[in-house]
Amino acid sequence: MLSMSYHSESNKLEVLHSFFDSASLSAPDIVKASALSRPTVDALLNELLSKGLISKRGTGQSTGGRKPVLFSLNGTGRFSIGVAVSIPGISGVVVDLSGTIHASESIALPIWSSGEDFVSCVAELILRLIAKVPDAKRFQGIGVAIPGLVDQEKGISVFFSRLSNFFNAPLKDMLEKKVGCSVSVSRYLGSAAYSQLLPLQNNANKSLMYVELAEGIEMALFYQGRPYRGHILNEGGLGHMVIEKGGRTCLCGAKGCLEAYASNRVLIDEAKLQVRNGVVSKVPQDREMDENEFYYLVRGNDPLALSVAEKGIDYLALGIANVVNLLNPTKIIISGAIASAGEGFLDGIRTRIRHYTLKALGEELDIVFLPFRLEEGAKGVALLRLYQDLNILN
Image (cartoon, rainbow, N blue to C red):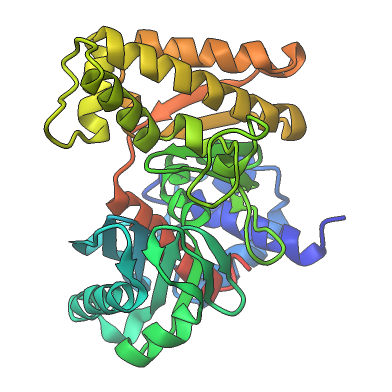
């Protein structure tokens, strides 16, 4: 059963988000657009006003009585820093309450780098961003989101598969000693994907499933505008769903994981292997190829790229359908370079997901594809840090 505090926080989030798409709103406007009562809206507006998160902006037109007071978001009332880590990329931003990015920094770190190098790089990036915060008195804190297994309560990176010897590392403490500010540590996609939900607040009361297809395969679940968090270490480990019993060995050490069959890294490696074995294709044999180039070839109907992608995507569709059958989300967002693969290819993925899904669930399922930039992920991390510190999300 959901607690009263959960409903209170969800209501607060809904009211705050109502200002993201409107320059100004009155209490009657919010009541009309939501399922909240007038007393509840009035109480929440007063709380947001007392925290400096919204401001009064005059009065609106009367509909028969007194003119309603108008409120608007005080975007620069708070600032935070968000850092999103998706090796080899690390991106950080300074963000205000409205989601406006005031500064950004990025850095690259090779896969299998040492934990010491990783911590130093992240700390250096944070220090550069701290110097760019517009108003230090309104600075709230720092959020860092990393992949792998994370103890979010203690700020410990339990397992990070793309770093060398980085196990049970007290990342929160390590970073706070280097930067001298409060740092929270969370799991990458559950935090980073939050930036993609801000334009989708008309779906705030529905369940959303967010999948990022990149070096690995990550998933985040959202309900009532809030990310679902696992008990301690993990949630949304779609890439490590076993899809083939006794199958290929995954980077995590297990066999048969979805990631070992459908991640971009695996698809590109498979295509390059077939070129080395004599298959004719535009897939390069003698140089690296990134995921953007790979899906460009898919869009251009390169026979080999298309064949490899379709085989891998069939596994992905099966994995996603398993989650749909279990949790019945209303919308699925699939993010990454795959969004550029062409509408025909993407329609094929939608068809496969619905094929593996129970008919009643698949018919109403909304499946969309979005490109994803790591900077946007850092923005999501920063906003979540702000909301948690302001007791809007806990």
